Length: 157
Image 1 (spheres, rainbow, N blue to C red):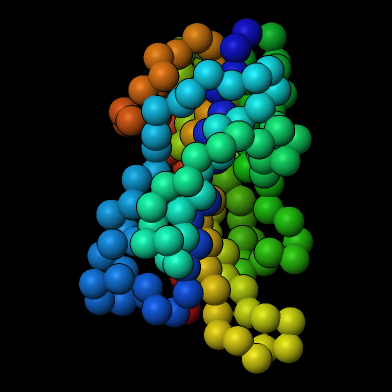
Image 2: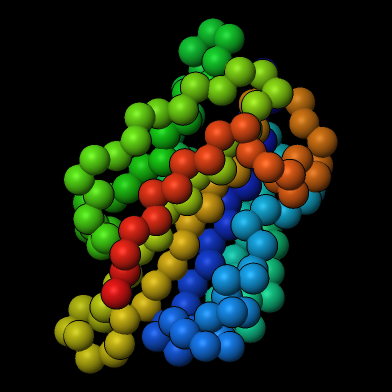
């Protein structure tokens, strides 16, 4: 069965934490039309503060996308991965995996906060949005409301 994966990575610094810059960041889309992709690849969209949150589109091998996908017969099991070193904000209780039926899709969001290794530079932030559809879908599927929304965004002050 077909699986369509889109990974939207939005990154910013303290400069876009409030005011007009935050409004621009918050207005950035979390879903895009999906282009034709090679097998076992995801649509990767990067938006960053330094580019004015202008979307930059490409592709990434599925193994590089931070999600676990497993076919369970008539369902697709989806679970976003959180690496131990990316523990801010803390995620003590994670939601269970989502099991999609054909024709369904999930939007899973996780955010992070980082400092430089020596703490010389200020904090930086990013939001990962994973849009995953099971079965044949229209290229504009991720412009609609998801069947399932998993919001793991936490406080990143």
